Length: 302
Image 1 (tube, rainbow, N blue to C red):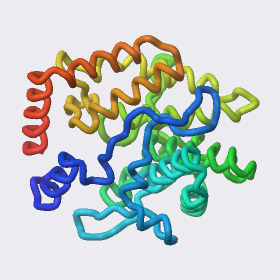
Image 2 (spheres, rainbow, N blue to C red; image 1 turned 60 degrees about the vertical axis):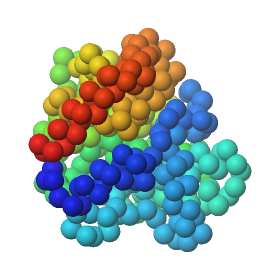
Image 3 (cartoon, helix red, strand yellow; image 1 turned 90 degrees about the vertical axis):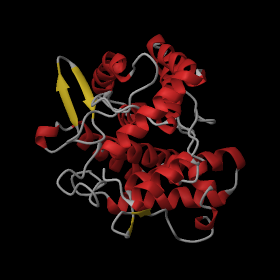
């Protein structure tokens, strides 16, 4: 990633809390284990930071380095999930309308193979990712729960089927020794937060799959995540990916929230262990300073 004016501004917005892509995302406030209710991560600030979209037919866009405003599927899926949580919290049907608009966008922009062209603007040769597939499925399944319209469930199944397709066959998953890894980027090192978001989509589909066909994939991908957790942690902070990138303060906080949710969903104490460890790292001023410094150096060197 080049040290350009665009990236400097992006990093500044991220660090000062002015980037809608990097707002607070703590533990979800309205989810219930085993039910398609609220989302596991709190995405409501994705909506409240863009109040002008609520009263229009507009959807969030991403401003690229080329100066273009593009529709980025993950941003739309997260906006919709945040809007649904706000509807559940307030009963305000403005949020429900916007949530359903995001669901319709997901349906109309899903490719015939079940995929969303997520990274077309930056990685045209590797445009698909498990995070987009999982979050899209989570959005569509909540639309299905709200409306009982089977079109949403069918589209979610297509999204999950594509996500589970091996990378070597054009999909977004890797398989080894009975474990599955869900890749946010199919050509880059495995990313922790993307793996978790993708897994939540698979978990959501398992809740509506009466045939239990996807249970084995759910358990195998949970095994993959569980086995790799130690590699996403060092002595003082969490790591963004398996390529050694340290997490920014935003992603470190997100990792904590995701581990908290994973512990509640699975009951696996390994997730609680890392949530507690990373909280402790966060509260240690020396560790926090070391992580911030290392991240800044990594960004410059990129």
